[in-house]
Image 1 (cartoon, rainbow, N blue to C red):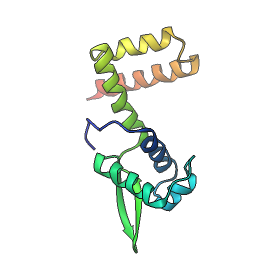
Image 2 (cartoon, rainbow, N blue to C red):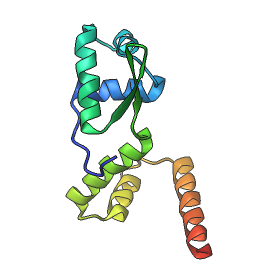
Image 3 (tube, one colour):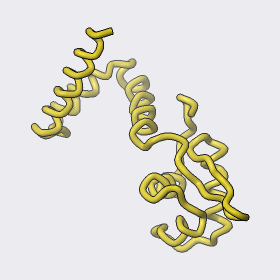
Image 4 (cartoon, rainbow, N blue to C red):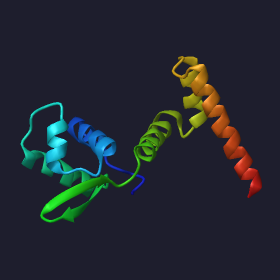
Amino acid sequence: MDDSLPELGDLEREVMQLVWAHGPVTAEAVRERLSRPLKESTVRTVLRRLEEKGYTTHTVEGRTYVYLAAEERGRVAAKAVQRIVDWFCNGSVEEVLVGMVDRAMLDQKQLRALADQVARAKAKGRRK
């Protein structure tokens, strides 16, 4: 998956959430779970565009396309956050995290989990 994935519209984001949550999925399965009524052909078009943008891939079972995410939700989210960090904070992840802590966006449990993850990453880096 490309690091510079194109932005997604509202419907594309909703479809991707369904692909991540329920994948592998068919267009019909996505259509049934959408928050708004759409024709299956519209959903197929959205899934095809998501594939063109690099968000999904597909296999064929009989005559049916079955879609799956090209990459995990967390990795796609991290790439999106990286774009925001680059844009607003000149690449400073620390500035973003300090801002999140200052605005109480992270609770104590999340801060501990983040600190534990940082400690594991540091320890892993020392072993190399």
